[in-house]
Each structure stands twice: as C-alpha cells, then as structure tokens.
Length: 141
Image (cartoon, rainbow, N blue to C red; front, side):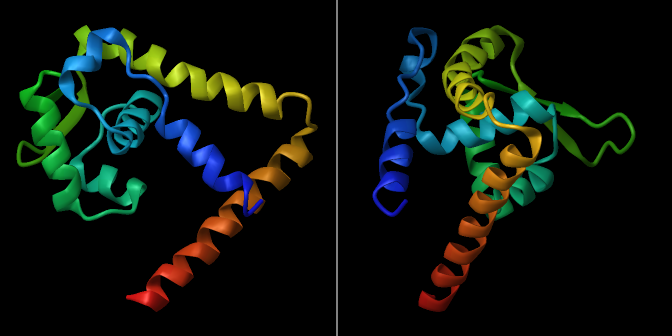
C-alpha cells in the first residue's frame, strides 16, 4: 500500500482536463470541489469547506476564481438571503461530468465484483488510513 497510494494519487492528478475546460487552468484541487458539487448538488461555501476539510477562505477563493471564469454559478438562498449557494454552471456541467466519469468508472470497476460487506471493508480501510495520516500531519504542525 505504501507504494500503491502515491501512484494512485499521481494518476488521479493526471486525469486530463476536457478540451472545453482546458483554457480555465483547472487543477486537481478544483476536481474535489467540482466532484462535491456534481454529486451532492449546490451548497454554501461553508458546507463545501467542511466537506473538503479546508478553511472557508480557501473554498471562497476557489469559488471566486471559478465563478469569474463562468464554471460556477452563485445564487442567493431563497430562504436566507444572506447566504450564497454555489453550483456548477449549466454550460459546463456536461464537460465536468465527463471529466469526473473516468475516476468514477474506475472505482465502479474495482468495487463491483465485491460483496457489499467487502466494499464497506475497503471504504473503512481507506477512511482509517485518512484518519491516521491526519494525526501525523497534526503532529508535525
């Protein structure tokens, strides 16, 4: 696993950006934000920051950048006009879905042969690894 994980991450980071999105200088950090918006739907900056486990200011900067480029859209929350809801702009949704589909298809291929309990075991192992590596990064701060 020690040899495999860096290769998996490096390969995921090299997922080619679709032609329609190439001029926007998107990076792997944008991939996580866009994946959340695509799969979980529109959300506030605070919610996105919590799910990505980064500071709200970090997400706010990404959202501002992607909004200026027309990739993301911001709307006023109808229930609370002080809040802004972020979503993927309709004109870029298809390209973003295509960009993320390769990774989703790879996971589906890897996990499909497993029984539900085995899939859960894989997910639990990855979550444990994440939790343990977070402890290491906190110790070095």
